[in-house]
Amino acid sequence: MRIGQNSIIAFLSDFLSTILGFVSTILIARFLGADVLGIYGLFVSVVIFTASICSSGFNIAIKKRISEPGDSGKILTAGFVSELVLFLFFALLAWIFRSAIEQYLRGVSVEILIGIVAVSMLSGLVTSVLDGEGSVHISSLLRPVETVVRSSLQIVLILTGFGLTALIISYLIALSVSSLIGIYFISIRAQVPSRESFTSIFSFAKYSWISNLRNRAFSSMDILILGFFVSEGLIGIYKAAWNVSLILGLFSNAVSRAIFPQVSQIANADPRKAKQLVQNALPYAGFLIIPGLLGGAVIGKQVLALYSPEFTIGYNILLLLILAQLLYSFSTILETGINAFDKPEVSFRINGLFIVANFILNILLIPIFGWVGAALATFSSGAISLLGYWHVSREIMPVSFPKRDVFLQLISALLMAIVVFLFEQLVPQGEIYTVVIAGIGSVCYFGALMTLSPSFRVIVRSNLPI
Image (cartoon, rainbow, N blue to C red; front, side, top):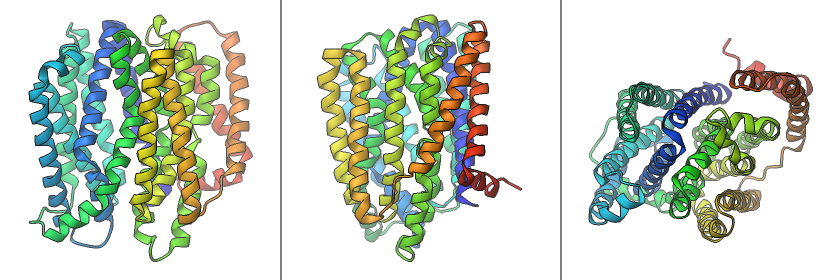
């Protein structure tokens, strides 16, 4: 399957799941309030961050080694055993410090946390194995399955009067279902690992663990630190703004996932072609984020009002987080290429700098600026990451910034923003009108880009499933 088609499948599946999660989050906010959404968002952030630490880069290493010729069954088992040991260590620590953890989580029990972390780790492992096999079109469908199950359960339970516990249990059930489905499609069969299998995993994981942690730090560090400084309600509004910005970064994430196996397979044999794959992917870092930023500037408050009128105070947060997504998307594609060229030690240094900067900036800025400080920290650390990856990529896989493509995306987005602004002035205020205006804006953007960009037309036509 072509990279473009893999990317489109991955994007559409991620988009569907994110939209379903968006609707579910709106219902949580409207029926249970910003406080419950904040507690739930804080809990999910802890789960994601903890699972990332426990997997400790093994998922990325497994994906890399399975994508290479070799004994994949032994690699799979070695990775699973390594992650299991780290999980058991986490479970012991969580049990010892359960009182402090439950207080931070506003009363959610440690047993539930441990259970969901375990299933979340399994889900990540399954996805990495499928990605390493090149089955991105299958692994990409697992997230929509998880989201459909989770959102459906949450919506039903919310409407029948249940609260926070039901939200968390739905999350556990959904992760379990998607993991089992993914296991069914894995073609590799586990084998007794050799010492070389563990060595191969560790040789990559000793650098790649920080890459996994970087991704989670970008999506969760601000919320985790906000948990010490601000109320549950503000965390809930911040989480809602983050979810909106997340939708816009889906396509670049899908492209990154799709190109990794292909670049990894040919990086040694044909580095020039591998570099070109990364170059071709770069224009799509801002493919949705640039129009999302301009559209958010025009109707961002109306979009946040879909949750509840009180959420509109997160307008400035939303714009900062969208900007952060733009910077992070470019750096993620560059990181994917560098890892595919088997240079994890390079990513290690840059990701370490990103995590330290992200943590320090959050600690410094949140006490001064409150939740705006968290968004500023996320944006600033994203800029640091992009500068670092751009610098090192010039030696490993020299690529050029796609100035023409980005310029055409910007022009198309400006035309879209003008149309959105005019419609926003003409039609009444309301949820339905906001959705309609956003849809009109999307059509205008894609129409303008198809008209202005010959390269975009070629890519669309070459990847149509006909």
